[in-house]
Length: 118
Length: 398
Image (cartoon, rainbow over all chains, first blue to last red; front, side):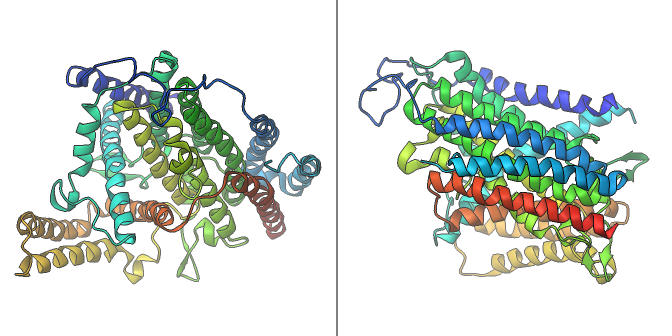
């Protein structure tokens, strides 16, 4: 049903235009006095010590990798949920095998300490 | 009536109501928090601060919009609009009422009816991370970058329990269409207890509902999981550098997300528009009684001589008469099939929004390592176990 998606696109366009139109209208009402000090990065009043694009903890990368593994898993569960009645015990067994592989992976990640922050 | 004309009318109404709700969610939040802390809250602009959202909007729109000199201007400007556009669009798939016929037009409140409604919502909520991640990175500010990194990690971590908690009620209803999900929760156990998914017959999804709510708090960056904007350590988190309309966009996106996720919880777990108890025991009269009681209370206060506030002398009688006049509208037979389901949907979603605010006024903030450990070592296994138990029991029950 393509017409089901039409309202989504129109709504998306409106949602994008709405703040832009407000921004355009109020450009003439708001002050614009850019001075160098005002445009500095905010660091509680002192001058910025260094660029913000520095290094940060590797934990964030580990979380991202774990997320990709387990999120793909949840996507596979949706078709199973929709066809649950037709697949019956076959589906339950398949998902049990599929999830047990992932649970082994989860336990491995837990033992390695990947789930512990710091 | 023409399909396109009808869609345009419904869209304009939905957009108007959603934006107003976002603005007044802020007012309600400030009022409820204030009363929890024994303060009156916003009181100056309009009666009981009712015009405060309008004043805030005008103030934000007329402030100077600053683009820091170290920032990446394109992505810096893109991020808030991405966030708000995605947050507002998610509302289109929510069905608010069943189909009804009014003046010869057959329609329903709710913009569209996708057969993959749940997947669409999950996709949009995943894309919501981009607004925050891009905004924090493009600001080129240490606080913003830390806030956006924390927020991204938190949102992806809590997306797993959220998705798992969504799958378990789907095992009971076997469809991704939100309208069908609500329609399948029709009826009552023993003629009294509603057959919502939280009370579903083989396996009640109460645990799934709690997991969904906890994950929803983290997804919308709310207390107790508001680490991305922890004021005491990160100033304002990912929107430290933002001002004016761009700040308002982030703010609006946050409240639109809260409203949407409360509507999703209502659809998936709380039976959408179905009433709390059967119509034979008078559940249709609830909105009438509530409105009439509120109107009478306001009129009673208007009659009190001790009230000497400037606004109250006008607003109490006017709002009292308005609410009293609105009460019998719910008794008109033509409008009943629209208004009663709509009332129940709004009541449930509104109660959930209130719970969000209530929790903000009650709980302290988590520490970041506690937050991540809670997601990965407690909530995720728990949601997995909930899913497996649900699957087994539903398969056993046939």
